[in-house]
Length: 315
Image (cartoon, rainbow, N blue to C red; front, side, top):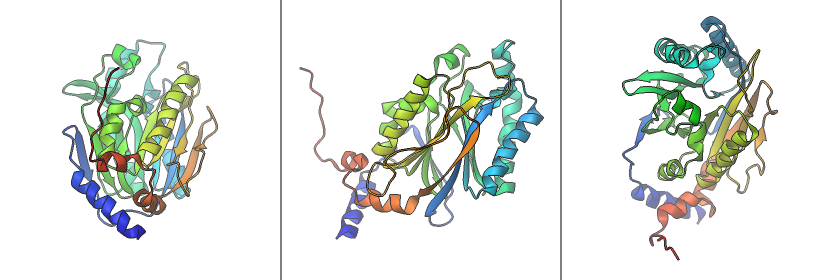
């Protein structure tokens, strides 16, 4: 009767589903979702004052390495294009120049790499110029030509000093491997974002980050673990590490988080702290879907199926 229970749960959840006005859905489905996903999470050594050509060659080499190791998806960390910044000089004009002049070229580069290498690429994030100002944008390019841009929703103190704007929409991507969302660093820590995701039932969450202290890494890491449990999803987090001649602080580590239930790892798979490397892992999506339908430990089911609303009382 497990199959009947799973069918009832999924049917009721779909009937209860309502799109939030701040959630955009992007579909790239051409066939049934993949049964497993091989992921490469890059602990990227963020250098400073690089030339565009050197930077793009460096990114291309990581993509090539990920592809040669059989990866379906490669994930880069937050603010990767700031490798072009010389932090000894005024930072705001340099960041504005990246947003205006380099980011459009970088988006095209990531799209071209996804097609020619036949691999999905989360190209990290970059400042991007919009009608509302500069936003911190993640780029997800698929081999089929589909590209999704996700703006960071909540700004850190540095981003506020730079005068950047927060995004207003959370994109839900029907990727070839399943329903996916991108939570850029700080965004992973906010309950309102997680509450929106609960209605969407994601299978994979991608978390590109740049953290400069152990406390910062812990904030993102601990909440990434919570998101994996709350949404019964895989969470792929990666970050920047110290590059050549870097003066900006970095405290980074890639990690793969799973739901804490039968058949999943009880501890995250992690890269070596603060070391430039690629962390490889394989996500068993078939097992995730089976257990997600059957499990009594999927909070999203309880949230969607609860008929008696919870109330808040102050005493």
